[in-house]
Amino acid sequence: MQATVGCTRLTVPTITKGTTFAPKVTLARASRSKAVSSSRSLATHVVAKADSSSSPEEFDRRAFLHAVSIGAISVASSLAMSEDANALNTYTQPKPFKSDYEKYKDRPGGTVAPMQMARMRSEFRDVAKGDLMAAVPGIQGAYPGLLKLAFMDAGTFNIWKHVKPNGVEPSGGSNGSLLFEIDRPEMAPYKDLLKALEPVKVSVDAKWASLAKSKGSPRAPDPISWADLITMAAVVATIQKWGASPEGGFPVRQGRMDAKSSDPSNRTLPFTADLVTAQKWFSKRGLKENEMLPLWMELTENTASLRADSKTAARMAVYEADTALFQKDFMHGFTKLTSLGSTFDAYMYFYDESPFLSGNPMPTGMGGPGVQDAYDLKSLR
Image (tube, rainbow, N blue to C red; front, side):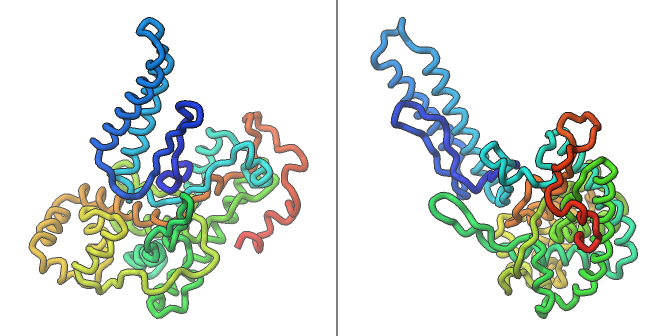
């Protein structure tokens, strides 16, 4: 998702003068039949209005096609916001438009083209993954410790706070706020894990800046956020525990922005919680049973409560017999949980490069103030 899907009111072009169709998008589930019927009634209304003053011979075909297109847009937007609404509780900063040029023009990579963006994301992933694959085996208690650390960071997501007239404000989530919560009692077992990730972050930032410099960028790109580092470390630890990457890989979304303060306390689910408490907690955050169970099987310290329930025990037996199914559902649950409440920056991890792919260095003056200090390691920590 590039823009604020699931979090903003969608509008469509004006149908007639003085009349607009602006369906309100909410996070509530909507039925497929209701969405289709509403779009059909809209199309019928518009066509009838266009045809009311015309004979069949003078029927304006363009009005009909306009109505059909409006109906298609409404169906698409309604269905996107219905069955999987809870999976879309993420906020992405929109990519800059012309009106935002002044805001984004001094941002590293603010002028790169889409193909360059894809390449840079891949380069960044390889740099971060390489350092983590080398470092995680040497971290004591990496699994399930790093997985629990990622859960502690993401578990502070509560509920989206609606802001009038049509916006939302994220509350908690995977945002690196653990750095401000290190003194909380529940964080005591994970202080050493956070400390172990500090040299990894310094290494990733230095290598990423060096790669950008080798490509001719006059500025260092954004350093890896703690939210992304914690999430990616959990994924690497999990893959190493499994012994190999699952078929198709383990997708990890990049670009989480770090919080500037701590999240509210007493929101995370204790690892000693019983099955019923865990089911309610995950359900409130939109995770289905098949997404919750594999994840909780790896996190819980109260396995007895899972096996005490016959239905859950039967599902656990299925997962134990089918590794591929377990990994698939685990990835779905982990990806959804570590995206809830997160603010994703669409321009994070890009560096300056000519949008024409000419191979020439960026023009003088594109770096902005302070470029001479951009590669000082102190500024990357």
